[in-house]
View 1 (tube, rainbow over the protein chains, first blue to last red):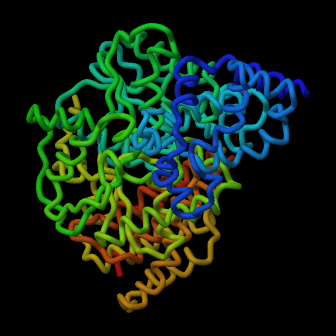
View 2: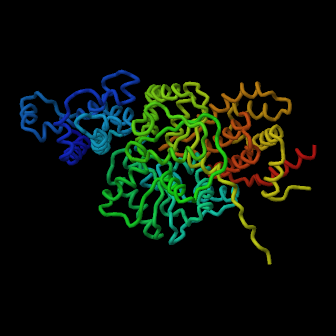
View 3: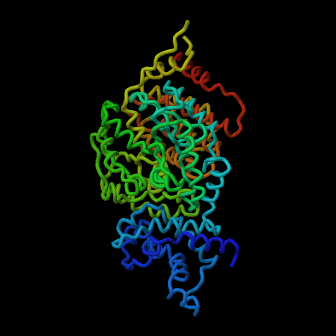
Length: 427
Length: 147
């Protein structure tokens, strides 16, 4: 056994906990999880059945923690996990799983298959079997602080552009601000309009907010590759920044996994409750709406539909809020089949979009989204996750569907009257 | 009177008709085309520069320009190549330029801002030239208005 395999197997043995043991024992092999996975439904290849993606971990569990499994191993009826097998499983554990959680919610015995895949990724990562794309993202997170190599000067450059464009100041390191706004690398690089939208919305709402120079990056590469230690470090940076600035609420950006990592797993990762609240930007906007602080003008009249990011809706429970916001600015908002809790993934979540070798499969799986869109024939597609947005655009481009994709926060901001910024007074 | 600052610049751009906004936007993009180098972007800019371009002609070019925009995105988790990213913003400005103009859209101002973002990306990738993009854009607008 190679040193890396030994490490991977040791980690896998450590992460097999009571829930995983009960899940393996409870599985009734019904196959419902297959029908819930877009990689299976669009390829019909049984290897993409979610529970099958965990087979090496299941065998290890059986061999290590059950009497029958130990006997089977002893008499050679159950083979040991090998390097080659884990390498082969990379495609199943990473490329063809976006951690979307659809399989978990259809399981009739309540197995949280996403939880199991996440644990399996810990072993895959420790044994060196994570995809190169995710390894690179993780290394950059450790050395630079951002999976895409974004440093503070890039953020400051974007801040200057927004200030120039809208004439609104972008606060940095303001102690005692009510909100600390996080960004994902994707928003810094590809969607500068997100920060502009935040500035405009906060200005209208009259709220104090700030970016944090030591913690602006929300993306959690540790969670995607399956490395809890790294995930903890990333969350700790955010906690340190929020506590240093004494903010009341940290706003997770339009990035699905950033929200799950910080809101739902953050306190467990750092081992204590946070002294501040964590909310997704969509939740904050809906609160502003309820409080009468978000005042929009006019309506979009073309046919719009909304793609629910899996981590926001299914895994995060935020479903009504985005609809309240859509109805604020859209006259012709239509729902795709399966919208909301059971929405189908864009195909690029959970780190899948960073895996170059998975692109062909991703585009094949995109046929599911295409069929949802074909059913309602919208003029534009709205979403609330920067990664979904790009994956959707790539899929639409591949299938020659002329359908613009826009971010919800940005669309709301477009309906807010331009701010009247007082000019600086001379002497 | 020469444009001296962004406030005047924005106001003067907003006063242009949609067709004029497209032509001015195309001039802004043309100046920074070297950041992209994509022939689909070039075709879009060249079409948008022409005063006599038809909507049908633009529609034919729009899909290719949009493909250039989508293909140049930096995907989540990938290492940022600021040079490619500069090209993305040029492609985005070009794709917007050949799309039907929506009511209330500030096409020329948005293009000016995207090109400035592209220049910043270029600087991040090691371009040390001070392009004085804002001043150059003021001059382009003044020249357009004087004709």
